[in-house]
Amino acid sequence: MSLRPSSFAASENAVRDPRGGSLDPALVVDAGGSTRIDGPSTFSNWVLGSSAAMRRIAKSIERAAEVECTVLVCGETGTGKELWARLLHRSGPRRNKAFIPVNCAALTPSLAESQLFGHEKGAFTGANGRSLGIFRAAAGGVVFLDEIGEMPMELQAKLLRVLQQREVLPVGANEPEPIDVQIVAATNRDLEKEVEKGNFREDLYYRLNMIELRVPSLRERAEDIPSYIEFFSQRFADRYRLPVWTPSADALAEFCSFNWPGNVRQLEHVIEQAYVLQMEPKIPVKRGVEGGSRPAGDESSGKLPCLDLAKLREQAIREALQVTRGHKARAAKLLGVHANTMTRLLKEIDADIETETDGDESAA
Image 1: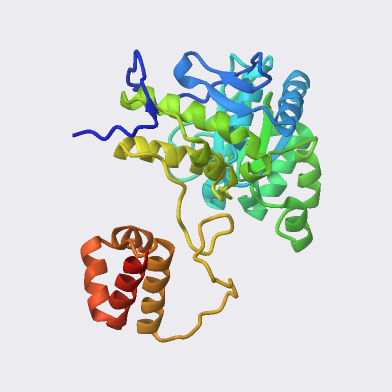
Image 2: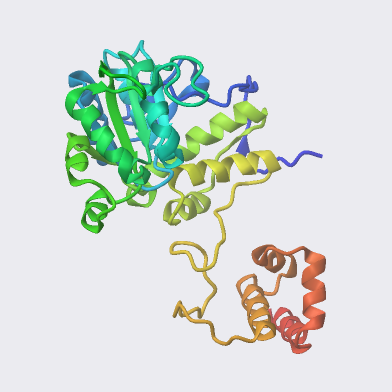
C-alpha cells in the first residue's frame, strides 16, 4: 500500500514530467515579490527566492546580459551558479544562440587546448578532421566555464589571451580566429586566496571579475526556504503523481533552522527522496555537522574520547538511544543500521545498556 502522510494535500491533474525539468529560464517577479524563472512550461520553473540578496543578483544579471560583459559567479556548491548563468543567457540578446557549459575541473592539459580552441586536420595523431572547439562552436552565444578555479595553470594563460584579444589559435593553425562569445565563469573557491597561494593567475582573475556575483548560501537566506519547499513539493508531486506535501509549522521551522551544507541542491534531494520513498520529508541527520541534530551532552571537542573501537561503538549506541529516548528502531536509523543489527549489537556490548533503556522506558 502506498504511504500517504497526513500532511500531503490533494494534487489535482498530477502528471509525470518526463524531462525532469529544464534550466532554460526567463526572469519573472510575481505579485508577492518572489523572483522565479520561467522556462518553456510550468514544469521548468525555478524559484530563486524573494530575499534582498537574490533580487540584487537578478538585477545585476539583467545588466550583465544587456552589456554582454564577462561575469564571475561565486558561491558554495549547490547554490545554483549554473542556473544564474543560464538566466543571463536567456535574458540578453544572445538568447537564441548556443549556451555551452564547460567543466574546467575535467579538463586535461593535453586535450583541453583542442577542446576549447579547436584544431586543424592533421594537427596531431588522430586529428582526422577539423574541429571548431567550444569557443568557436558557441559563436554569438555564451560559454559557461564552471569550476574555473580548478583550471590547470598552463591553460589559464591561454584563456587570458582569449579574454584579452577575443580570438583563439586552434591547434595546428598559423593564424588566430576571432570569436564572439560572452563568458560566464563560476567557482566555489575564494579566488583571491587562490591568487595569494599562487594557484590562480591574478591577471586572469581581474579579467574574469568584470561583474562578480556572490550567490549566498541557503542558510544565509532562510526566508527563501518556504518558497523552495513549496516549489519542489509541487514539482515532484507532478513528476511522481503524488499529493503535494505541505509541511506543518513545526516541520517548516525545523527546515528553516537547518544548516543545509549542500544548499538548494540538498534541499531538493531531500524532498525528491521523500517522494520516491513515499514518506514525509525529514531533514538529514548527520552528527558533527553544524546545524544538524546533535546528541545532548556532545561537547564537539573534535577529539575521540578513546581509541577502543568497542567502547566507541557502545558510546554511539548509548547516545543514539538517548537521542531517541530509548526507541530502538529510530536509534538504528540514526546509526545507519538495520533494526535486527541494532538488536544484535545490544546483545554483544555491555549488557546493562538494555537494562538501562528498559528502566528509562518504565520511568517514562
